[in-house]
Figure 1 (tube, rainbow, N blue to C red):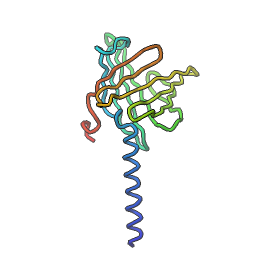
Figure 2: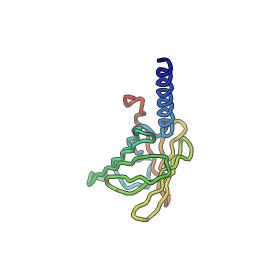
Figure 3: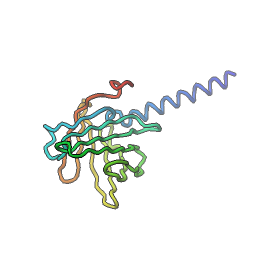
Figure 4: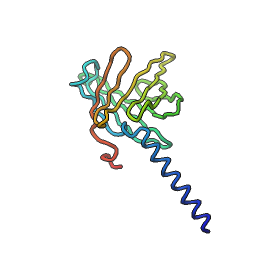
Length: 155
């Protein structure tokens, strides 16, 4: 009896530790981010929000909603973010495959494959956790402000 109970406790602790480690992989990125159009001068959209929530098995799910200038169009994308070195298909307005690499706790390198055309960009969260900067090829830089963290969103 004691052996079974002890084994169950060890398995439970192992699972909890694994889940905490997975959450920490993308921890600074989790939350709701809104583009700061005052600081973002080279992006043609009117509005964009990024919602990052933990994913089962580690990493996170990134939902990106974009509204074009003068509300003429809108789109949404779902990005499964996993730091496993494998390409993952996105769905929505700009379908492609993205491979994610966690450079450090605050920086992600993304390798995009759009029908064989490869580009690389980075997403970086400030040390205070309040700003997300996306730097794309050609000097395109988007700045996002954190609106809610995961704990504020009911976690």
